[in-house]
Each structure stands twice: as C-alpha cells, then as structure tokens.
Image (cartoon, rainbow, N blue to C red):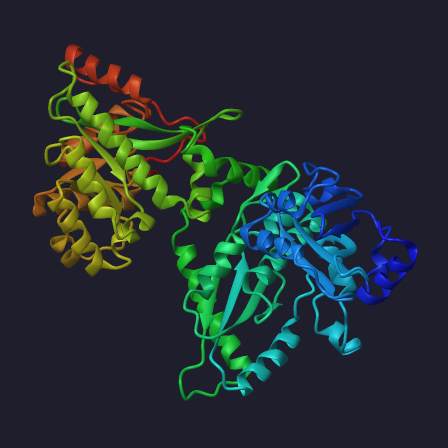
Length: 576
C-alpha cells in the first residue's frame, strides 16, 4: 500500500478517509505500469473472493458486467497526480461496489477504498451543503423527488430534447416481509446503482417514491424505458437466494412546441406507469388470492419457477372428457403440474399466480400447447388408443397477445401431422370479451390453422349473443361451479339449462366441468349436454396413466362414474 504521507494526501483529495476501517471496506492499490492490483480487506463481501491477491485489472474485469469491465480496464491508462478515481461497478453475480480514490504522485499508481454501493451514499460530496443533502435520498444517494423536479426544471429550461422514465419495483412489500427491511434496503440501493450505471453521468436518476425510480434521459430515446427495465430486472444474488426484480415503467417526453413544467412531465410519466400497472394486473390469474401467503416461500418458489421449464419440472396432466350418453372417452384436457424436486407435486393454485406475476404466462402457454400436440400425436400412433381422440389446452391473455401465437400453433399442427379438430384451444369467455373484435380475427386464424376452439368458463356473464354468433367456436364449456351447485341452487340450474339450450341453438357442443356424481351426469344428459369431465370420472392423470386409462376404455367399454368430489385443495379445472 502507499506510504503514510501519500495516504494522507489521498484522504484529503478523495473525501473518503472516514470510511477506512469500517466493516465491509476494502483498500485497493493499483500499479498501472505493472498492471498489478492489490486488495486488502473483506473482498468476499464484494463478490471478489475468487480473485488472486496480486491480479491485474483484466482478471478482475472477468467478474464484471460489460460496462463495468470497460470502466475498470480504463485504469490501465495513467492519469495526472491527484486525478480522482470514481468507479461504480457491478459484478456478474449482482454485487455492486463503489471505488473511490485518487492517482498518486508517480502518475502510474492509484489507491483508495472499495465499499458496497449503499455505503458510498453517506460519503457523497455535498457541494450544496445542507440543501444538497436534503435533495439526495439517504438510502440510494439518488435525487429525491424534490431534487429531481428542480433538476428537471433546469433541463426543461434549456429547451433540449429529453425523456422522463419512471419505474416502479414490484413486490417490495413481499420482500420486506420475507427478507426484512435491512436486506430489502440493500436491494433498493443495488437497483439504484444499476440505474446510475445504465444511463451514465448525463442522465438524472432519482428515487421519487418508496419503490419508484425515475430518470431524465437526454435526447429522444424511445427505448429508454426498455433499457431501465432490462438493467433493473437482471437477477440479483442475495446470500443463498436469487431475486428476480420486476419493474413496471412509464415514460413521457415534451411534444414539439410544448412547454410543460417539471411536475407536468413527471405526472405524465407516472400516468403512463399507472396504465402499465393496470394492464399488468389484468393479466394476473384470478386465483392469486389463493396462493401461498408466506412471503419467503413465494420468493423461493419464484426463484425455482424461472428454471422449472428448462429443467423439465413442468408436466402436463390429462383429465378425461367423457361422452355422457355412452361413457365413451372422447379426449383429454391438458393441465399443468409442477413436479418440484423438494416439495413434490405442486398444484396450479400454488404456482400459476406466480407465473402471471413474473411474466412467464406466455412461455408456459406455448410449452403446454407444444406438449399437448406431441402427446396426442404419440397416442394417435398407438393402434390401441381411440382413433378420434382430441386434446384441449388453455391459452391465456398473455398467449393471445403474442404476435406469433397463430404461427406457433400452425407449426405444431404441421410438425405432428394432426388432422383438424385433434388439437383444441380453450380460451375463457372473459379473455375473449377484453377485445371481441381482435379475438374474432385471432380465433378465425387459429381455426384456419387447424385448431378447433372452445369457449371456457361460459356462463360467467360476459358475452352477448351477437358475439357468440360471430366467434368461430365449436364448443362451450360450463364452469364447474354451476355444475356442482345446480342441484341445490336454482340460479346455477337456470344457467346450466340456458347454456345447453344456447349451444343447441347455435349447433355447438357442450362440455360440463366438475362432474362428480352420477346424479349430476344424469341431469346434464337429460338437458342435452353431450360431454362431461370431473373427478367423478377421473382426476387429472400423468401421460402414462392417461394412456392406460384410454386403452382400458377401448378394451373394457364405458368409463365408470364414481361419486367422488375433488380432494380438498385440488386445483380447479381449466388452469393451463
């Protein structure tokens, strides 16, 4: 390390003498001529414990993100004596550190301290005295809302092009409950550092709310919101847990000839953020309220969930669909289950809300359609299986919003040589009625690709008869609630009768979900309902069990019906 005289001069130059000796602080000394970096202190706390004691900056750069590596490698160029060293670096594992120091008298060596990014906040220079400190957030060192508005006013007065982006970090309350406030604060400080590094010195980053960040980006950058989300949503390692932050963003820019005040332009960006939140909430599963309430369990499951598809842990189960008049097996509905390595078989109620919240619903939907197409193709190749067997699979709002959904389904049908009608696509009545015009076009395209279409959960009160006539559907599915309660609830019985009558008038098939007793099956058949599925016939089965069930029905005849309600906590039918 540098001699005592130089060290004293370093402290006066950098303003960071007060941090030396604190827990978590590392001292550094770098000789650019020899490319030799020495670190002294608890390097493991910074995620650098794999670095040799006298490695060069090139070795250290391998631990860093691309931007941080480039900034670090710039140290190999000597600077004049007294020039400051100020680096904000991010490791590939999600650790953030602040390097503060100065170049020494030799001009080829620099020295200083390395500390966790959040620790650097308290020691930032405060050129404006007390007012400057009040305009800086104590946790992150970013501008406060008041400071942000003041700085934005200056930028607006300069009449330069700019864009304001606001991002809200989701599920912070859950992090507080699961991790505690201290660790959650570290996460927020690390996210602030990501924001600062992403947009550089010309931007104005700020923390404008407890969980809300903002940045003024110079110029007209239409991708600024995506850049913010991409940077802040990178996985973050926190002890043994990998966190996956999620962000909703909104952006606004002054129109040409417009002269908004700073509060106006921030309000516009926050309004755009509000619209993004509403759109995100509309995509959440209706069963979110039934998900596990333990916050740490949810965070851990979320971490596991992101790799579950790649690890082959998500498995389609298949529930038989039976023709009521003769007990003949007609097809299966594919339903997702998660075979967790530690928790066993997890039902959809416990993980589908997380799929929605983490933005994985479209990926899950595509996986389930692909798995169902492959499985029914294998079954059709088995001479012992029913020749006209179909498999249905659910598509969600997220699937319908994918621009490639029709091409994906068409490709799967071609790849597996499936005749028209073998692959059934189910969408809920509510999803169709979000945008009926677009849904009608999309469903017609799916039908042209070779899929047949079912309207799921029909009877929940959304559709009009005019739309029912325009949609290219072949089947209505009655929600299991009405089937299970029609015997003792006159309202449910009327809905079941009405749906069956409507289907007959429109020439559609009807599948009743939740058939659990022979009495229910008989009542449905008397009304003219053609098909039923439910625990009375069979629960959802793994692919091997479903194949055995189908072969037994071919050899042994009608499917037996046992009065059997679903087990407590069983997943609802129609969940992926």
